[in-house]
Amino acid sequence: MNKKLQILLNGIIKENPVLVLILGICPALAVSTQAQNALGMGLATTFVLIGSNITISLLRKNIPDRVRIPCYIILIAGFTTIVQMAVEAYAYSLYQALGIFLPLIAVNCIVFARAEMFANKNKVLDSAVDAAGMGAGFTIALLLISSLREIFGSGSWFGLKIPWLSDNRIEAFTLAPGGFIAFGLLIAIINKVSKGKAIKKDDFGCEACPSRAVCSKSSDAQGAK
Image (cartoon, rainbow, N blue to C red; front, side, top):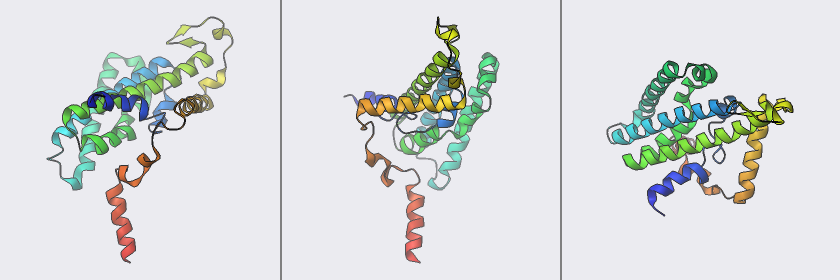
């Protein structure tokens, strides 16, 4: 398989940030009561992912290792501010619906994970493709969760009423427990289809952890005492 296609598909399927890596759960559950809100959050996060990944990949050889995290924070916060201002200016109803979770993209663990684990080590084009795949995976996961919640909880989809379901709503799906129910159902389906092999257990080991260097130093210091 083409390398770039594999990188793209990893974020959508094998390493889906929400349904496989279990990252970004707060916004995924908080804004997923309606499909249009979930789509807006997904696209906004994808923009920040692509912008920050490209910029960090371009600057990776010029950013001193000791200050790389503060640099990531500044760059990611900059792109988050851009998307927040754009949404407020051109989609104010979406801006109100997303609320605090729009500026909180700046501290989304998905964005930081890709900056540290991929963009910091790979070329610009590969980093952009990785960001697009992760953003697409995040958006798809949000759409799946929100579709389940809106269809069964509100009897509609993207605001369009669905016959029969609109008169027989399960209102629990519009509440916080409904988000966890939809989330759990989707994870169960993915585990069933992939037979629990969507991601290898080794991928959760120390070698893949962005904090490995700090953790290793702490362990060495304790061992020396």
